[in-house]
Length: 415
Image (cartoon, rainbow, N blue to C red; front, top):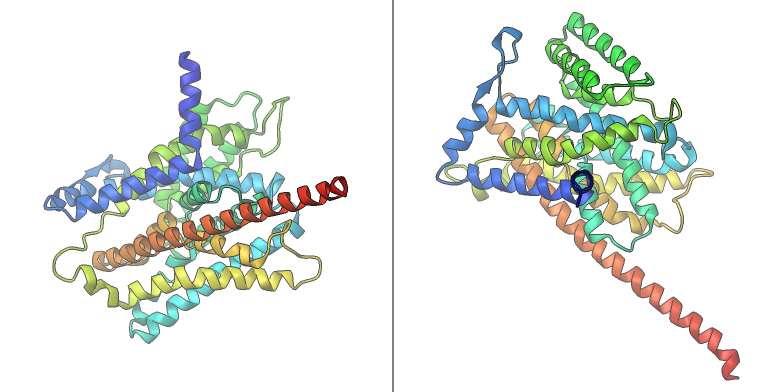
């Protein structure tokens, strides 16, 4: 096989939804195993290792680089997806997008309300700053589970999940920018936005050098990082300014071209690296293990993700379909959205990030991470079981329908 073909095959493999999900799981499993092994001090030391130029105030720990730096690549892909969906995708037609949009909003409001309610009942309202932890959805993880276990289901299910996840990402990014920004420095932010504007101009040129765009994106990240706004936001902004329609006689829009470059990096590098440094929570020893299950924060996150997402998404979809002119695509029913709601309860990447931003105390952050990991695993298992059952039910119904048609066709000949 020629080198170019092998290279394209490798990029195609790394861009698959299943690949990204599997690598996420492997990285998180490795981190959890190491963090709870006799060599867990080595994991902590690696996470806290500081690298980067101190003169630029970029002497950050590897854990911070993973959350602020590597994850910016993932959010760049999110920005590209958002731009495409708004200009030429599922968010272009408001009638088609309205139901999943309302469902996504419900899938963020209800989890937050449940989270705050459980904390108040548990006597820990002081932890309310983490209200956004159960509102996020990990689209890479969710699509991987859908691709593996949802084969044979109608495409409308995947479109609904994609639209819901895109809106979820947009709302999550807005929440991070508005509620988890401290000590805002407008000067640095202005410089960052000016560099983003320069990136937009370069991305629209007839000949847009990828290396030049990367060279411009790096200082944009640095300036936004210095401004106090979480640096991953610049990834979304850079993705959103890329043209979503074909230009200069090109066959494909540049959002697709750049997504083809960035998605393998996101799936194979950014997300696994973040998962490795974020998921390594030590639960062995004093105060760990089963003792964590009674903690109000853990119960609040679990209730928000597992219960809140299910109630919020199904309730939002039910409410939207009662409005004139709005309905689910194809033959999809509210019952078909149950596995979608469970998939949306897989918080993982963004929930782990918000958990880190919500609390200053490392023990509280670790507890929030345990809750996110536990909820995501349970949600993934329940979604997989439900998807498999629905897929088999639909295949069985198709076979029975085909047999009925054959019997009807054969009846006149028999007569």
